[in-house]
Length: 299
Image (cartoon, rainbow, N blue to C red; front, side, top):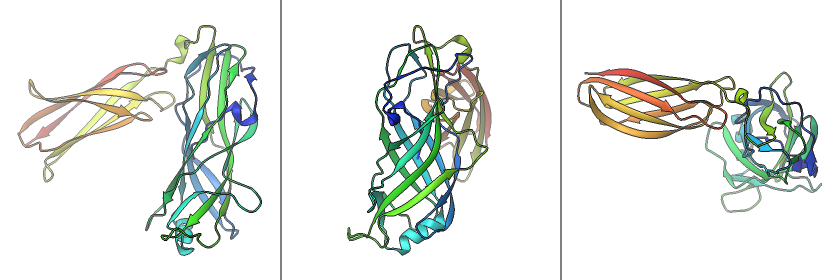
């Protein structure tokens, strides 16, 4: 579950922000490790990533309403337990104590909880299980220039398990409590608050675009991996990819860049020669443009 913080979680309408310096906006949280305990009092480690639609910058006195998106990776051992209890799917539920899934997080250090919805998610036949969740906050209105910092905290997941026939599985709903392991950077987002709503130049990070390519002869394909480096390792947006063989254009396309990474696969590549892959990263609100290229020999 991506745990992006929202003042809405606390019902706060306005906020005094921290001092403004170099403010690289965070696009999403790191992979955060949590120590979790299930109803059978067993211990598990969950991995969580968190994100919101919070803007990179906002004008003093204006508001934004964050929508939280989250992904929780449930380990295989717990997936096996859910399956053994007859759960073909899980979804958000409420237990007899009235508890439901909620995120714990902080806005500039002020901790709170935000209710979350969990859609119907299939319990896979094997391996880890990824459970998504979403929550919508209320408006946040910064009252001074500075930075709004959103960080992840502890969370509780209450999952209703259903059998393939639609009935309740054993031990449904299934409550799991999770505590963020110490020593991690739990920042999910930062928002710069300025007089005119634009980012200060110091907040736009330099980037480097590196491209590596390889040719798989049996599959007749070229695979190019793109890495857009930045201080926060969170570059997003798009990149233009141009592939040429000698002076002849072979392919031109755009790819999405997520957390500084993207991949391009070219199929049915059979003509021998040296293929040049040129990538132009377009930048985003907090990351500057950059370019890179790689050559792949075919035949």
